[in-house]
Length: 466
Image (cartoon, rainbow, N blue to C red):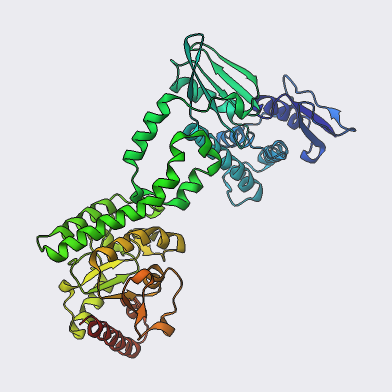
């Protein structure tokens, strides 16, 4: 057995030198014990001394491995040194292994590296300096509790960003101090060593409260990106719970007021409120679907409509046109509305999910079904549309729309053909199939039969809205 002792848990250079020597001596990974400082090691292991000039054939390490290793070595996983050495030894035999992301070892190390990168980002995003006056001189102190050994790796970022300040970053393991010219390290600290706050924070909290936009907040995503453990470092997060608690009430009141005014004043207040809502939706980032999509496809139709139709999501043509139900399914929908005696221009048509979810297949974009998280992320918009339009009848076209409206999985076969009550006094609802279902039927007779049944469902909704 060979024992390698590193001076610090993030000492990449020492690990690299030791790995070079071990590889030159052809030491198997299972015969190496790695430890940091005075950690208890293997009593029977011999100390490994890195070679200054390793013997053996030259071995060129892929750049991708070095990038992976520099991040993964900062993880707290005690096996990281051994895992990296194992991968390095395999790379000598399997030169393309680093590109095999399905390999269990590569995948595990990439996972460690990903966690480290997220922790580095969180330190940069959530660390907050507080001003202290020391002998008449301003100094800024911050407290942070990293998940991994990232403090030294992050030092250059804070030196470059806050080069003109004198600052200290305190963490449980190590502290960094910058005097405007040189960076120094100190021992770990405690939370009580950092100041609680300063006058600047009160100004910032007032500003933050004034710009807080609840329409752009997705609580689950916020907690995923900014766990509560970091809230104590940030003055603005003390305001978040009360701002979120009052957000829905404030917005509901605003929309309800606009709707009530529209009922007594036909001058267009309700339309103005809808246009403001649509404009807000154009910048929606409540889930990841906005990234590959061309645009938000919002609802369409008069806000005075007595019937609201809710589909699943925009398709390829809707994504390009920016309008709901204009593709093949839309043509089936329009034909069915005509046979049911419903003027589409007098209805409000929208989708449960506002962005096109797809899988690329060459030049084509193939529809992909929205998942529960994506449906939930868009429920806010559907709720606001319903509050503005206040339709007498809402028709869910397909299972995704039904799940969005009712907040749970609904079975079309069981619920179809009867009036249902939407939650929170949302009015009457009917559930039927999505028009695209009719397009997918392989048998012509089945398509004719199911289309006729679909038309009958629309007639029931029309009668209920009369």
